[in-house]
Length: 385
Image 1: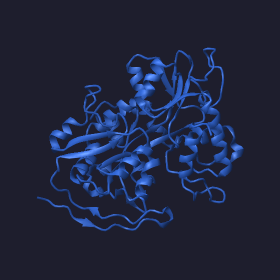
Image 2: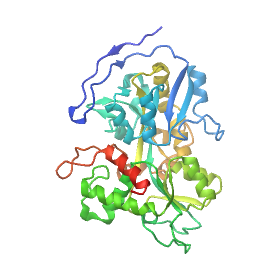
Image 3: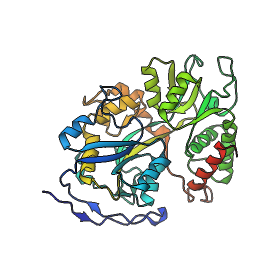
Image 4: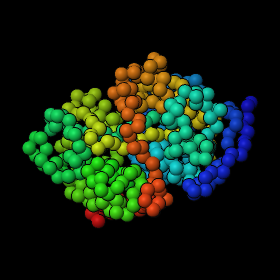
């Protein structure tokens, strides 16, 4: 039997505050029989939601590794679950990935053990949300924008601005937006407010929605406090948001293409748009827990995510973009060049991807509001403070 061997990796950049890299697997042994994954809703499908969307069954049959999934609805929940342990992999967004590295919760990835690594989009291979000092801490999974989802009966024409969820107004149906819009239940939503202010208040000098000095941060919080008077719910469960659009009179919210697709497939009058201010977005990475109990199955799964129908079919299912560009055109699944273009494959440079805010940032005097304050202050906003 092939055994696992270990080797040391390089130390990480001191400026990030990230600990030295852990020993790295250099060979894959016999599959352990299972792999335990923390994932976003809709990311790992075995045909139970819709029969045609299944990228798990064939993997289990070929590898002998049963795929067990724990769904998480926010990045903070993912970090908490990985801190608790008991999981092998997580599909982490950029506002969680570096926290996991800094907290010694994930280990470096040996890309030599992922044969399809060379097929990954070059824009993602060394992305800063999973690569530190040249060390890769994950395998790119999927990426896409945070869209403005809306009811087409309320909005006969697509809204052109995020103002419909940030500022009180009369909507095209003659009714107020108060109590009919939603906002994301996560501190990273502060970046959406900052993104809005970058466009409407350029005098604030915001250059990145994730790097905010005290004045910029205060302006974003003030905008969010005003938004609190409008929102009917702070959403974090995709399926509850779907129900709210169907049954609770919600007509506009920041959302993911996943919810839009499911609502449209159910015949609901729903569409989405990226408004004039642009959008934040997510580029998710499969990361390996430092104490993974099933590393062999985990590596087999990471290769499967790049080489199977997963990339192509998940892009259609979620309305996202594959980390392997060839998945758009090579016929391995449902994606086509046209569907990838529709999902924003050509808009990569227009999206400001989620990343964890840090106190040492590039603008002004280098002093920015750190993420721990985003967490506590956003709780305050939701609570009316």
